[in-house]
Image (cartoon, rainbow, N blue to C red; front, top):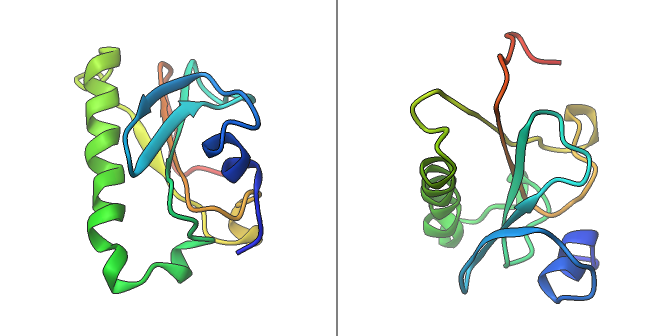
Length: 114
């Protein structure tokens, strides 16, 4: 996988407003927020898209959801509600080809999206 914007954030080459970090996962505020709370949650392992997730990545991908719940609880938005979005490839809106989850909250979110 080629280096992406997210790889540079993981490596500390580009600054980010980090809200969570451990050995496997990094979460930071989106620079172009689509809601009052808009956080990106990424694995530090470079996985380009959902299509590139391997069986060995199951625990890591599951951890993204665990981290999302922790971030929501810590931010006080878990009870009110939030949305998690993962786009796969350009036609779905993926612009950075490093697997990532959007956590959106703080306003009424409509359905269907997009």
